[in-house]
Image (cartoon, rainbow, N blue to C red):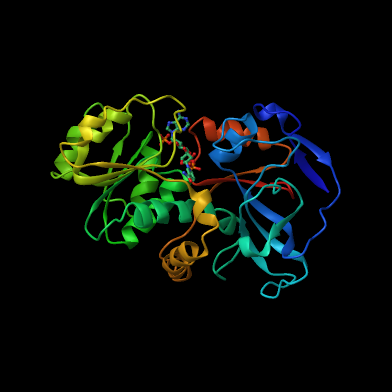
Length: 325
Ligand code: NDP
């Protein structure tokens, strides 16, 4: 089969398409014929050796994907050949076939296609854990979604609206703000607007209750000045890849909390995953929420997909398809 094999860490140039054997399915696993792979910042950082966990080479990236079950390993009873599923975790999806633990497969509602299925797991589960599990968001609270037209941002807007919150969305272009608005954002502002703080406080005079922070960088500390009393700042990403400074005493005045968010530890916690699914799946099935699919690339052009995401030009989830897009 065709697969991307990373021999050495680096930028898009290290993504080499090679022909390697189809992996054999082990006990408790399924073999999936890969349909679409969600490209995450985490994949790009892991290939560069800059992610939260150490990357061991050689390896095939790709930890979020949809696929059709091609073979079922011993002991797997709840999945059958021909079934479309989404998978979350591990690596190896930048390939025509990938094996995955059966427990890491999510069933797909009939109204989602393979592309939407691949765009689902990371963004929707991270958004849920950030908003609800860790952010303890309540109805009518004000949520600020940053990078609102991105994969995580579009999922966050939809889930926050389904939780009956007021959503402020920021992004870097008016086209991105239009997308955020179409998904239900109540107020939209350009993220680099010099009057952003004033505009947010005009819209929400008490300030922001839950801020989903993904850009990080030099402006991080200043952005916290819009927080409401008892506000929660959810540190989900550092897309700017700049360092940020925070004077902790500024948190005291309004009892503001800064909380780190990482999806990976939740993936092994079945009670938390089930709680999230019970909220997310009815929204998907009823059409009230939909994973947003962005540009689609092939294995051969995966490097361009990496550049595209870093260029801030993408909206929704950028996908890579082994069958060629
Ligand atoms: P997106 O598709 O949202 O793309 C990233 C967005 O970040 C860009 O579109 C851009 O939006 C914004 N951004 C701000 N500054 C920069 C910059 N200097 N370079 C590039 N982008 C920038 O990606 P994801 O939805 O996949 O992820 C968003 C963030 O959330 C990432 O930092 C990612 O690492 C993190 N994340 C964390 C998870 C966790 O478990 N903690 C899980 C999933 C994602 P704009 O142009 O509008 O500013």
